[in-house]
Structure formats: C-alpha cells, structure tokens
Amino acid sequence: MTHFAQLEAADFPELQPGSVWLVGAGPGGPGLLTLLAYHALGQADVIVHDALVSDAILALAPVSSERIFAGKRGGKPSPKQADISLRLIELAQAGRRVLRLKGGDPFMFGRGGEEAEALARAGIPFRIVPGISSGLGGLAYAGIPVTHRDTNHAVLFLTGHDETGDVPGAIDWPSVAQAAPVLVMFMAVKHLPVIAGRLLAAGRQPEERLTIVSNAATPQQQVLETTLFAASSLVEVPTPAIVVLGEVGTYRQSLDWYVEAVRSHRFG
Image 1: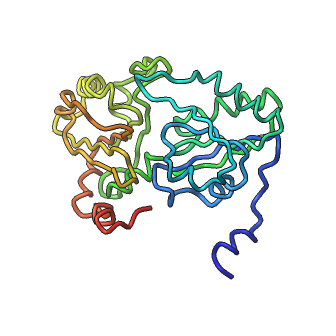
Image 2: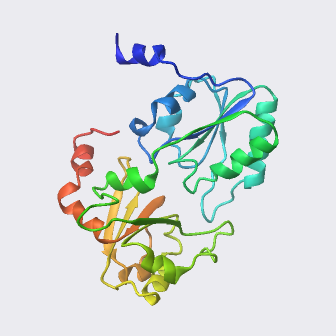
C-alpha cells in the first residue's frame, strides 16, 4: 500500500457541511502542513485564508474550492476581526464546509481563540487543527533551536503589537526582560527599535545576540544577525519575520542546514 493510500485509509474525520475547521498552515513551506491540514484542504468547499498562506499551499486544494482572502498585514487595509468571524458563521450557516486557514498555529498569536469563541456562541460546530508555529518551525529552518541545554531552560513568546498596531501597552517589559534567557517575538519588526529600547532599559545587554528570520521555511528565507543595541537602528527588514533574542542564535554557525537545501532545490 502506498503512503497516499494509507493516508486515505486512515480514520481521518470528515469536514462536515455547516462546520468550520480552524487550521494551522505552518510557517511557510507546504511540506510543513500536518496530515490533518492536508486532509482538510481536500474537503473544503470554501477556504478563508490569511496573508501568510502561500499560493503553493492553496494549490493543494481542489480547483472547485472557493478562496476568500482575509489577510491582515501591518500598515495595509485589512478586514476587521469581527467581520472575519461573522463571515465564517454565515458560510457555515449556508451549509458550506469551511476551512479557516492560518499561517503558523491558529492559537499562537493567530486570533484562533477569538474566532472559535464566535463560532461557539453562534452554535457552529468547529474543530481546531494545530499547526507548526513559526516561533518553532521557522527558527528550526534557520538553524536555531528555541531551547538548548547549554544556553536556556526557559523561553518566552510575545507579540510585538496589539490590536491597535502599537507596541502592546499591557506588557510588563521589565518583567519580560528578566523572565527568560530567550525571547521569541512575533510581528515585532515594525516596533523593534522601541522594543529594543525598552528591553535595554530593563537590563538586557546591548551586545546580546538578536536574530531575525524573514519569510521562514520558504525559498525566500533571509536571516539577519545583529545585536540588541544595533536593532534600534534597523531599517528595511523583510516581513513576515520572527525575532529571537538570546544566545541560541549562535547555533546557526553549525546548524544552518536550510541554506544548502535551498541551493540544492530541496524545499519543504
């Protein structure tokens, strides 16, 4: 039996009409989709996807599936979250099999919790399909282990902007600065100078290694290595990007495997 035949024979659930699956598409490459995400793509009547879902991933769905763009990108006109949730409800109430496809993991700064709450309030059946977060998989594709026994036993994940697009006002930056040796920051490039200044003021060292991974897990991946102090003057950093502060970035010197994979056209 082939691998695909085994997949088809496996007991995967059916995406039922009138229901919504909130699915994580992973950090970039189609090869990082989970089997359940791939299974969902093959069943959906309509795919409501964000800006981080690539054309290569969408191409895995049947041509008959309707695609609806619901992307949010900083500084650009974007649909409101309430409108996206309402659209999911309306599509499900119309009897459609709805796939809400998000980059990374829907519950890791992906607003999946908000959308699931809206579906629950409306009585819409839903399923959560976790994805590989860019804060894990994206860093792995840059040769950065998010934890390593020789450098850190703790890591802290945070977002670089709130719902208004500003630096999150509710974050206790002095506490964050001292909470873990490694900080992984999502959507932080726009406000990186401000964030760097607050971390420096809270006691992080100016020479501490800061690594930015742009377009992670795709052939367009770029990695910028700098310091926390120098981050305050960075300009023109490609996005989407994941930012990691901490000495785990030093492992790229020996673990940067993806550069050779791209050169050899071995993507995924």
